[in-house]
Length: 234
Length: 243
Image (cartoon, rainbow over the protein chains, first blue to last red):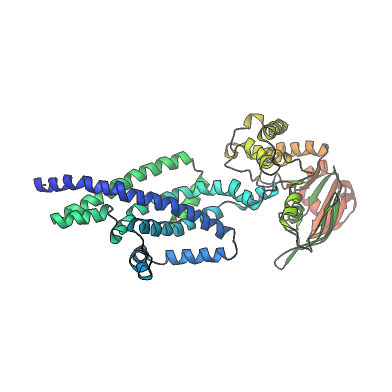
């Protein structure tokens, strides 16, 4: 590798990483937290078969899962201003990614809740618990444990998916890379570099995931349920 | 007294319980027997409202539920609270320790303060011989131990009626024996107990009354000896299979 290439890589490394720390990671974290909360609510509504709301949630999941994320981003960022709704890039990104995570992860939560044996509901019912008590005290803690590994997978996917936000002018890692590339005309080097940084992020997260799964002390039965949810998501 | 009158239960087109009427006396142990699919478990599950009958009346010491009318949720709940259920597959809460399983109902449903609930739970743990397992999770316990914790969990609610749904069917004979021993002790105390079981020698030992259910109807009722003395071909045949 020649000296110029090394110089380009070292000079751009920090700006790209900084974009990751200032945009990619906050965008991922905020959207993941909001999206997961939304997902939990949607899953509870659907499992509890709340009238009307259940149908609305079903419609929501169907639309979001059936349309490309990039189309959703364009619709919100470029489309909505047409009807007078102008949203800044970062809030628009957070909104779209949250809504997307909400739809996908609601299926994870739903599958996790449905994987809890009927006997658990019955045991709680037999103690005289109300439906919310059964759900909150008995079912959700068990379902959450099963949902956690698949949720972490969707978190890792989200880190990579936030690169789509480059298209709506959020200066995250990819857009920063594109801008640097426009100056140095070294697309091969630059996209290898940004790819490497994404890889770095994901490798760290994979490591965290492995540690987390060890600490969860999953039973073979729980592992089987998780595998099933992961397969359904893939 | 627990009075059941003209109870009917359908699962779709399947008429599982047909006009069942049955009086269960307080402080007695009643054993329900019958072949698989006879409706005996459904009958038990109707008594604590895990299944809602389609029609009929259940009356527990003056509290009457008429299933031909819509029964409000809170009325159902306060009725269920007065019964305790022990399941075939134990159904302990796997994310809670033995002690937490036992205090869950008293703290959450009966709103007892935690300290009182723990004191009472420790008493129950001693009662079922598992005092040293208070902090064990269900998956760290044998099947027999899990079922004894499940019995303690049911007792912690101080139910007026204790229901056992094939309590030892999921256990090998040795582990089953420790559970049966415990139920036998309880049956000597002042509990009103209803047990669904396939274990005839246990039924003979523990029962004050045996109810024989066949195809959703009560075919016979009486003491174990009464039943054998009836010389009903079907009953004799059933008992001979299982002994």
